[in-house]
Image 1: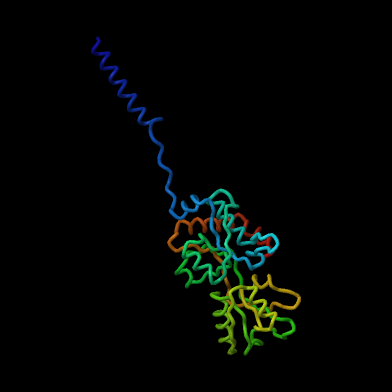
Image 2: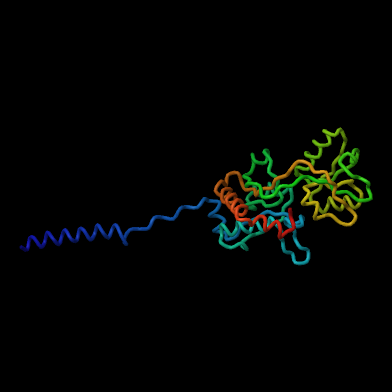
Length: 269
């Protein structure tokens, strides 16, 4: 009888050990490992964003408050919220058309949200999200100039931003129309506007939405529009997981109507 109890006890103990290994004592599966570039952002606690500081409505630094605000800043905040759970965890750094690429390349910023036009050539160097805004290149001139179209700029000088797509687009259109143009390149948009005001250039050309921010009572925006420009959020080519997260966020903002609300907030069409 004693032998039967011993065998039964051993069997029961064995069962308890097996069950304990299959239930509460079992370790939970490890959480999915984040991509290095996303983990780095989470560890740092902020998303480093390159944005314009001289483009009213898109990215503009208020000279009084020092605060950078705009449509693209709000999009960057939505991406920060997706990664960090807080839209205010952004480190905004001013960039120009010339500096945004190099700053992204050397890791000083994680993403670029700075009226960055998507082109096939640029896609070779950076990941771009799906477009969130479409615009065309326009022409800003002095009212007193009498200039009414690109053809009237034959033999005249156009101010454009360094490293922007504007010069190539305008030159291609000038070639089609058989007119000759010359260009002066500047580092920032305020410099181009100052050059127009001073008569150093006859026209300020860039994306139309940007030109609206520099329109005043002495200047006018011509009806001509060239080379549709689509803006996307850029990230390093190697950071594929971050690029997917960005794109998912953009498409979510588009599908739930938030992009349209932001456009309305900033007076964009």
